[in-house]
Length: 259
Image (cartoon, rainbow, N blue to C red; front, side):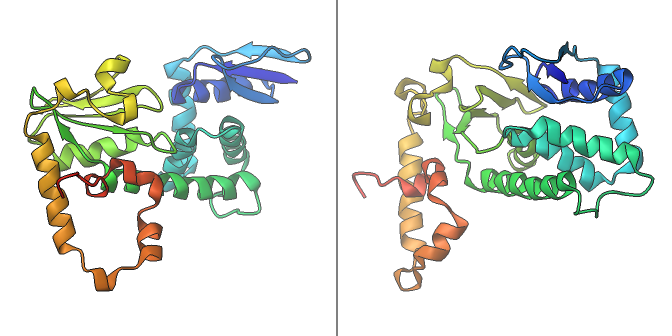
C-alpha cells in the first residue's frame, strides 16, 4: 500500500501522478499533507510539488483529452469533496492506459463521476456570477464576500474582470480564507485578516462602508419591489432558480426597516 501526501495545489496533485508512474507504485490514498493522518501499514510518500513534472503530466493529458475533459478534471479538483484526488488519479491512469478516447466511456466509474462533478461545479460557478452583490467601501473599492459550496472563485474571476473592468473590486471567499483583487489592470489572489474580510455575517465593518452604500441598497430594494408582479408569483420556480442558501448575497432579499 502506498499513501501519498501533497501540498493541496493542483500542480502538487499532478506531481503525485508523475511520482506514482515514476515509482510504478499506484496510490492507495492521496491526501493533503495538512490533514494527513499517520498510517500504520504501507509506505508513506510525501510528494514535493515540481512544476516541470506537473507540466509533463498536463501535456500528456492534453494529447489525449479534449479541452472540455481537461476542464472537467480541473473542476473536479475545485470540487474539494473527499476522495477527489483518487478520482482524478484514476481518470488520468485510465487516460494514459487507453489507446482510444475514454471521454464517452461512462461504464468507467471515474469518467461518469467526473462528468457529473463538472456539471455541479459549473452550475455553482454560474450562480456565483449571478448572485454576487458588491458593497462600496469608504475608499471606493467594490467588495463582496462569498462562501460557495465548491471552490469556484478561480472560475468567476474572468467574468467580473470583463463586467467590471472600469472599477476596483475584491471578492473574498470567507469559507476558504482567500480572495481576488482587481486593480483596473490585473487580478491577484489575496489573504486578509478576519477584520479586513468582514467575516462576521459576511459583512464589512460599518466604518469601512461608503456613506452612500445604504442608500444604494434601499434604492435597489425599492426598484425590485416595484418591478415584481404579485399575480405572477411562483415560489417553487423561484426557489428552483434561486435556492435559499444564496439569498444571503442578495440586497433585494434584505428588507430595510424603512421600506
